Amino acid sequence: MIGKSVRQWLGKSGFSVDWVQDGQAAVLSIDNGVYDLVILDLGLPRKNGIDILKSIRAKHNNVPVLIATARDTVADRIGGLNAGADDYVVKPFDLDELVARMRALLRRHAGSGTPYLECGELRLDPIGKSVSLRGTDVPVSPREFALLEALMRKPGAVVSRNALEETIYGWGEESTSNAIEVHLHNLRRKLGADVIKNIRGVGYRVAGG
Image (tube, rainbow, N blue to C red; front, side):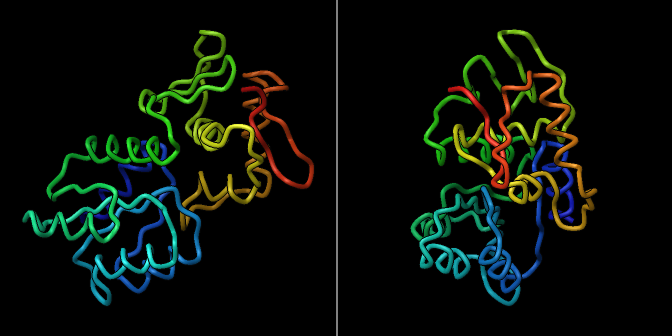
């Protein structure tokens, strides 16, 4: 029940979410996927959360890990942090606080202390879900926002079409063959043709800096 609520809330907050319910499935998913962040429950069947965390770090995977658990002793918190967790929330937790902690971890992981993403005169506010260009608000759809955020989190880097698709569609969500191109076309129309560059055969990047 908690997992379902978290997945729904994160989806409404602009995240694409894959949800697994046992430790072995979690290890397989993390080994075979590229994730920006992991929310990890310690009390999982088949493989507990601490062992999963140790496995992640033993493979030199530095993905941010946020532990979510009902275990509230100091020893449990220290054990999780020493095993490689980046932060800790205790159940029951407020979903808005969870999202705030996630965004703080993502900023820290990206080496940025500011909540805003900026590229030239383009600014994106991940918390307020707003986009502005030269100080003027630009209305965008949730999918367009997610795509632009994924590109702006890697300024100057080329992001592949597959990576963008994985960013905005979780497991079980279907997308049409040209959905990414349609969203990017709409963004270019709203922001200007030169803001998002198509590197033919490679992917897309946000221009400027």
